[in-house]
Length: 205
Ligand SMILES: Nc1ncnc2c1ncn2[C@@H]1O[C@H](COP(=O)(O)OP(=O)(O)O)[C@@H](O)[C@H]1O
Ligand SMILES: [Mg+2]
Image (cartoon, rainbow, N blue to C red; front, side, top):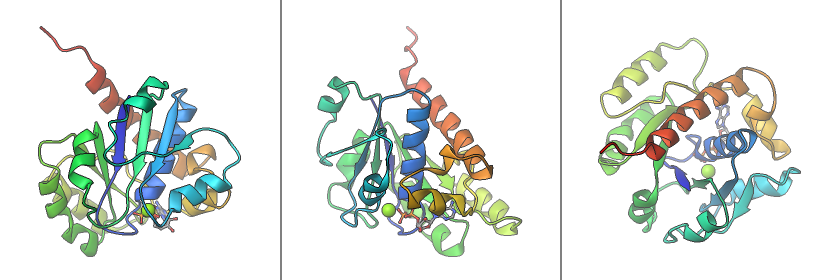
């Protein structure tokens, strides 16, 4: 089982949106996907209650769990949505992650927090994902440059698009519709899949 954690201490950057889009993409790709909501605000749990489709499943996952039970139950991909801030279990959770995706808006406020996040993830498999990217903004190129100096930046960005909140109204993901938002999520998921394949690749002797 591959554990993907959506994390940044900054609220509103797009953790829950990213987690849901990736989880639904995994389901659409034929994987057995579980989604865990560690945020007491319950954004993703609320989304799941509004969702008609049965997959991905929402599971209880304690941050200190290894995930062995879910893996034994046949889950291929566990996507973990996290609260803002730095909960006490964060280090342990990040240590269990096969991939940490860090959404960052191309704003001075989000960029200010990028260096400490990069430091906290040193030695792990992780990448920034630019999120809520406005159309035609010089800020974006500059943000990519600044982030690339600190760590990996996913080659696919999520634009600031109404499809993301609109899809969430009925517990859906934008990737389930057609349009630019869906294209962006597909590209981002393709990147995630390359990271999954890298982890699963046999080690050369
Ligand atoms: N790419 C996007 N385009 C437009 N709105 C977005 C996008 N990503 C997130 N949002 C909206 O921004 C708000 C915060 O996003 P959310 O994913 O809940 O962030 P977090 O979980 O980091 O607090 C939500 O209302 C969400 O619908
Ligand atoms: Mg959230």
